[in-house]
Image (cartoon, rainbow, N blue to C red; front, top):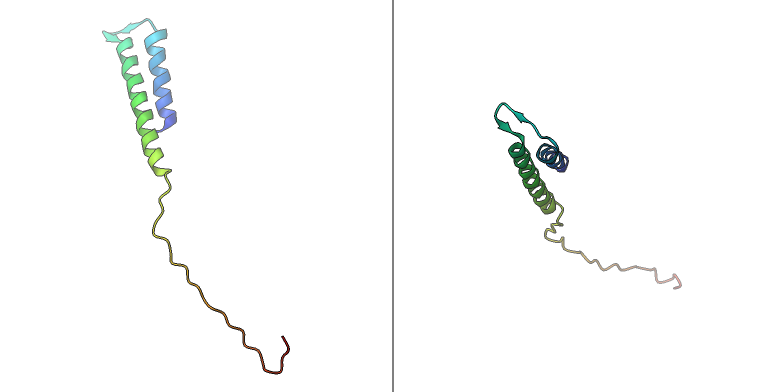
Length: 80
């Protein structure tokens, strides 16, 4: 579940809980709203934890640095 879906569930749950005063066939919309809000919060927390772990920098073993000694050869007759 993504961040957008979690926020959508939170908003929908809050609307059903606090703004709608209706009952559909014995179904209490307040309870449905609370359940949707809980699912939204849980999804937001889990999404944050999963993405937080992915964004941590993981450094592997460093490659060894190779140093080379470079020697220049000059002819005996060439001035420095």
